[in-house]
Length: 145
Length: 186
Image 1 (cartoon, rainbow over the protein chains, first blue to last red):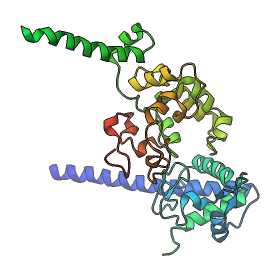
Image 2: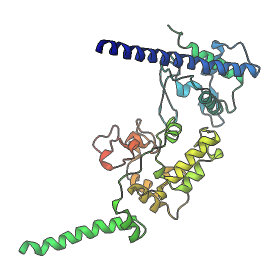
Image 3: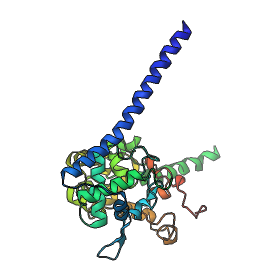
Image 4: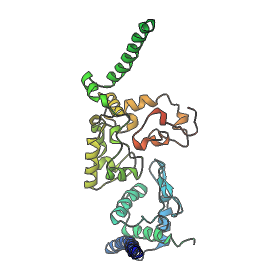
């Protein structure tokens, strides 16, 4: 009887874990798919990881002569953590293989695209630019492997 | 019997000096009496939204480090759009929640010891939006040489409380918990 009970409970625990993992994973791609769909609806398309990488590394010089790029804070390797240019706070890696929290929340993605594009490019990014960057960061999991 | 002659005045002197120092930190004797059960430090951050949003870029500075007036000046759409040179836009609902939490727990609405000192020192001076511009904070740090803060590669700025205050996250800014990187014996 005891044995049966344990088996039953472990079965349910196992099932719950499976559901949790499955929903977690679909959630991640759901969010990025929703983002891509939104960018496409705004007229963008053919998202390119190569162009995204260029965007990610492009340095823009501010009026005060300050050099700014995505990599200033995030670092050149999306799998490694970065550091905030002013506060020195550690920024968790962008690659979802290292940091599964990435690209799971559309609202959060839009918030940071808006903030960081304005900081870096002094304007909001276009849907195409954002789509390319997202493609690059999502591909970063496979890159250099 | 002989001992008592000097013990009593000595005790009284010690008591008077410590009490008067505490009374001075409060505005009135009544306030001091009420705050007799004051707590050291500042109240730790308890609001999850506040912590998440603020701490994504820097230490989630406790609301008790600035008076309500300062938070009201800082936490506006325009204020956050240029947040000390950074773009820190928030959606209206989130901003509202953070503003309400910050003002409700601001230095002038807190009984925590350091918050009371901050409030007392900020009275009559300009509304600071930088914690490092609060007279009390300035006074507490003015003797520390630049080489230990600005020119210290592991600190860089007075605004990075947690670089030296090892328990800043918990609202504990006691001198005993300070450890200046590269200057262990200071």
